[in-house]
Length: 112
Image 1: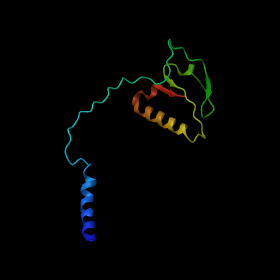
Image 2: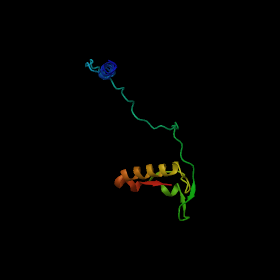
Image 3: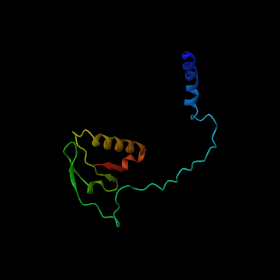
Image 4: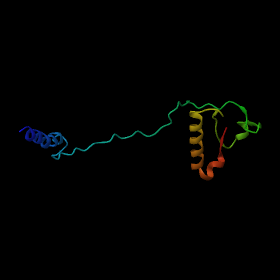
């Protein structure tokens, strides 16, 4: 008798467990996705924009580089460290990827 009771429970258990697994089709509802606002620059904006102050830096070869010497080009100024284990490689990777996407326009951009 005991073997029959266990057999009943063994056969009934999958039915009970599967009862809430969506056996009957439910009415489908339409999910609306929110409209995205136009993308904007995430940093602060200076209104009105100010001219960049004169700066002088040294490149990797020790040559002097100034903003004045870059006239006619777009200039990105960033500070990356040689021994920077976290964000510097990511910044450099993003800069390189962006510069590659410029194609022939790359000649008009200088990264300092």
